[in-house]
Image (cartoon, rainbow, N blue to C red; front, side, top):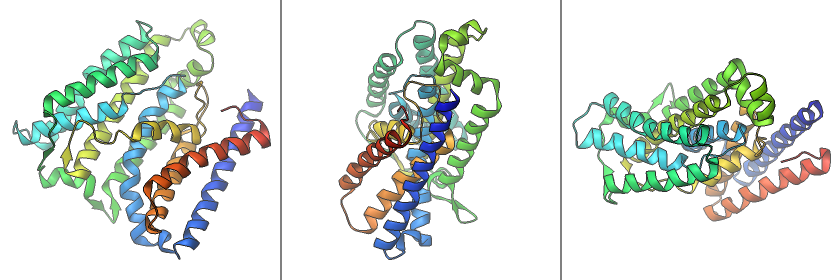
Length: 316
């Protein structure tokens, strides 16, 4: 295990080297505009949505599972909160609480299916993804819900001391999750469950309860992302952000999370999110196609994995 941990440190070092290279290269190509205040603020506005959704994907992957319903859950939370604000006359805090509470009901169903009914996570979350998306379509009838109060729009478009509010929310979520994974018994159990569930069970850990809490936490973070998303766009719809689903998995793997579970650190994942956003912003400044940026994201993932294989034989 020590050898594996050492190779993980090497993977983090390679990732940091890739980030530095990309920032310098794109900084030169954009003649410094990438590192300008306007570009950095743009990154700070755009990064949090993918960032919070990726945070929702980390804990299931650390247990060796996956949550394919993170985007559908985010959209449902946004749709329910939007209905609360625009049609039911709820105050902003009550509508947000309404949206989060609604998706957490589905989180209970998801947790029970995976933890106690023993449905494989990929099947349970795939089924729920389709079901939750259908519920959102029924609620919206396929239309966009728009026209939110200014106090709610501050969540996705406001600033505090010049720092974009979405970035503040992302930082709070990331720091809280970091403390949860590194400073609590639950975090220790998540890593142990991912690395050796049989040994964890014989150690007296309630594996099912840990799994339930893991997917409940994933749904909560997805709901937070949904609120940030509809505030940022000033609109809610059933199928916003569907392209982010595979990106959350890519960001986790690129950041060093083992798809088999048990290994991976949140700071590495945050760095990988920065890589993806810096590439997208740099390509935008250069006037290149966003589809080309998507292709480069996949190339970066393959490159980091290949370099680590050649250097230390890292298992990804």
